[in-house]
Length: 177
Image (cartoon, rainbow, N blue to C red; front, top):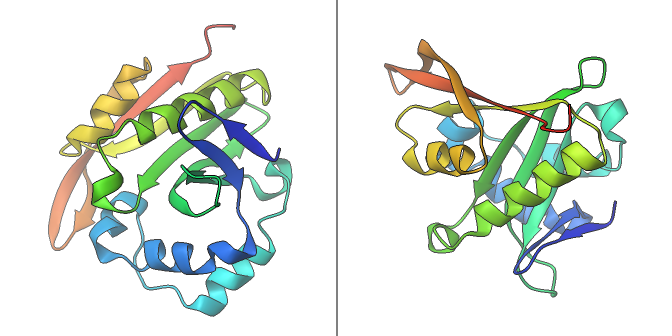
C-alpha cells in the first residue's frame, strides 16, 4: 500500500523524513493521555522504529499511517491499526491530529473513513474497536459518526496525573459479515 486517497487528505506509509514529526508527537505531553505514553522517546528509538516500519501488518501486528493534506508530503497526524489479530479478524484503531489548528476540519473524519474502508475491504476484518477517554468528546463523536457502538465503560481505567479516569470501549462490526 502506497497511499489511500480521500477528497482532501491522503494516508501514506511512514518515511524516514517523518522522524521529527513522530518525535514531536511521541514527546508532546499534552497528548500522552490519548496515546497511553508514559515516558519520552529519544530520536534514536524513533529512528529505529521507522527503520522497521516497513514490516507487514501480519508481522508487526500494527499499521501506522501518516495523515497528509498536501502533496509536498508533510504529515499532520497519525492513524493506527494496533493489536491486529488475523485469527479473529479484528484490530484496534487510534488517531491523533498533532496541531490544534488542524483539528475540527474533518481531517480526522476523512482519515478514519479511509482506514475503515481499507480495513474491511482489503484486510477483510470483521471488527474494529477503539478505547476512548469518556471526557474526549471529539473522539467519542468521531467514532460514533461511523457507527461505532459504545459497548462498555471501564471504570477508573487510566491513571492520569494522579486521577483515575473512565474509558469507553467502542466497536464497529463489518456490515459485510
